[in-house]
Image (tube, rainbow, N blue to C red; front, side, top):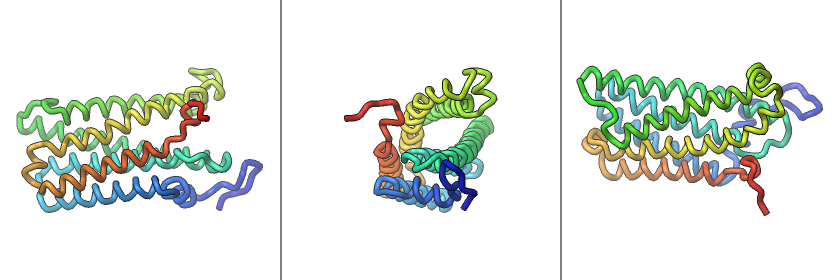
Length: 230
């Protein structure tokens, strides 16, 4: 436990994760979807190694897992300011780590295509991946601008003005989540995946990802998006 203040006792990382990422039916559904889809995918990758290409789905699956976990951390209404601060800190760590993972995965596939003289962005999966990467970079840049005090003062001349933009960061985050789920779903139709996995494995991965995405969307707090509810 952390030190007590007027805004509540600072929780540990495990307390925040337990409450925000695993509390409630929807959160459990998301976790199960992620666990099952990643377990089956990694089994396919382990039993069908493909050199440098293997690192692409490996890193991207870790990135999707991380980005979803980062979203879960901030979805519930925090009980006090201490929980909110701790949740935001964990969110930032997880999202930055996931960003590094997805960049690494993209770098491996680009290098692999260059090494084999293959063309880039010829499939819907690749095009969706490019859109996803663009949205992630915009999302992280936007988040940094509205959260970090020096940038708040430089661009918005105060924290209060920056806070008014948080809802837009959340909205664009859910748009990014849509493409984070769509891109690997499109990959299930690729030649390599179809040649190295069974239809049952592809169904399990696809359903697991879809369930995780729907579960995360089901936890959306409309009040945090600035939407009025009756």
